[in-house]
Length: 133
Image 1 (tube, rainbow, N blue to C red):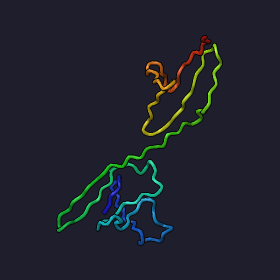
Image 2: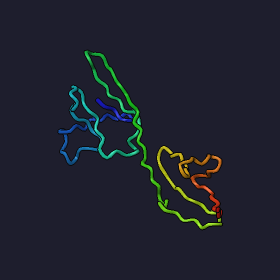
Image 3: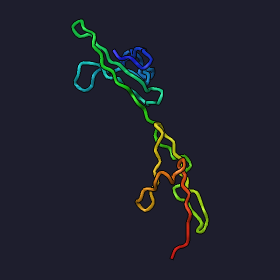
Image 4: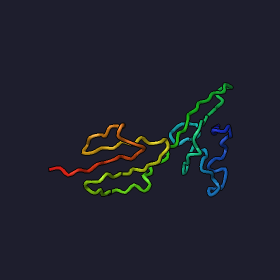
């Protein structure tokens, strides 16, 4: 028996309901050569995170094993342009707007050298372009 994060039993079983009514999270017969049941997630979402528990009664003894499911949100660089132009002799901003879960740590590199965190400000960096000979 599988139990979900809110204590609800996951009883929908492949074959117990019509295929088109099978919920995203359901159980199926063990496919890996074991005698238990597999917990199947289809089209996983962040609301699926939490503690899942598999419990079984073996010779009259109740045993269980739990795991914590974490679902990360894919990084989204939003409207960060892949090419940005700056005008020589002026101060400018380069933008890197990124979202994710967990919150991503933003690092900037120039010519394969990491820019120190003290120069970063919430994913923005101030660049002063100067003419050099």
